[in-house]
Length: 158
Image (cartoon, rainbow, N blue to C red; front, side, top):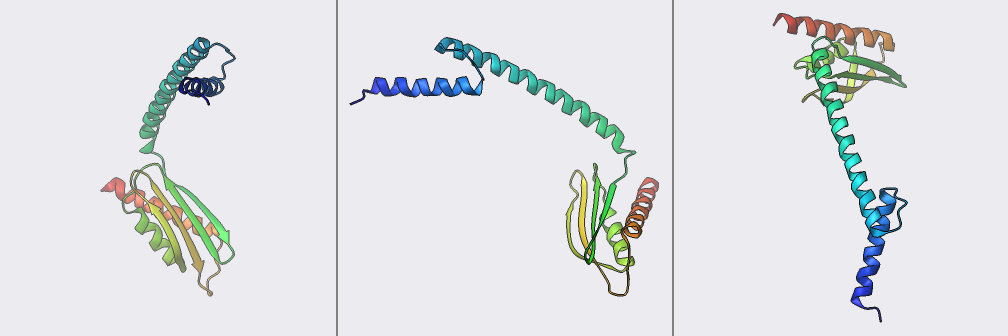
């Protein structure tokens, strides 16, 4: 029968070996493993600080560029229609309506759409062609671009 003390020692040994493997320590003694783990934690803290600084820098640069950046447009031709993706790093109130009106004006039917417009703007719309109209991806891209341009100009005036 194994005593409680032996079980506790076995569990402790197992935990130290786990700590050793996580920290990539080559130490053998318990105190050296713990010391290596402490150094590893300090390195991780420094990495987190650097990453947070990078995020802050990137965010501030992105915010200063947001005023001039326009939404990105990508249109893919599908077997019977199009996949329209529009993305902007900033919220764009009213842009969804402008894009959907242009898609409708082209004679396309929006079969499914996913939209997010909280802090950023993202539209993914699946449009099907009417049988009468045969439209290529370039025409859809240009029409969406013109809708964004008109929307942008009307927002600058307002």
